[in-house]
Image (tube, rainbow, N blue to C red; front, top):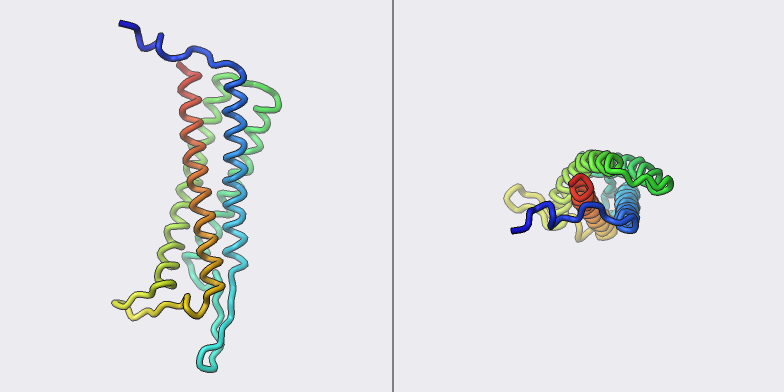
Length: 185
């Protein structure tokens, strides 16, 4: 019976390290881009309509959930940008040591905190967006998206972009954990 150590590769080739770092760089760029785009879209989502002679204005600042969503995405975008700089530093200098990959893994755990922040913001925004789109008959809230279509479409696009950012951050951590485990064995 072969031992478990014989089944696991001991030292992956340098090309594998570069491939993993390239994947991490791409995922970080996509996460930064989607978080930034989500923030930009929600901040610029505004619409004014006239109903029965009254003017109604819709902006993200009128909802604490949308404000939290915008700030959560902005903070995560900034932190992920710092993380990208660290990965580029490792890639540029070609230091593919186990300690660097372990430090990168620890850094990606901090990115999980950012992922949790984005996820909580997008969950809050999705809940308010759902009420805005479909209303709540039990609470007596009517839907507003039939009157504020442009605003609701921008908010929906912002939520989708934020969910994509969450997915990128989760995949990034899984890749980093797998690479850290592979090198430390």
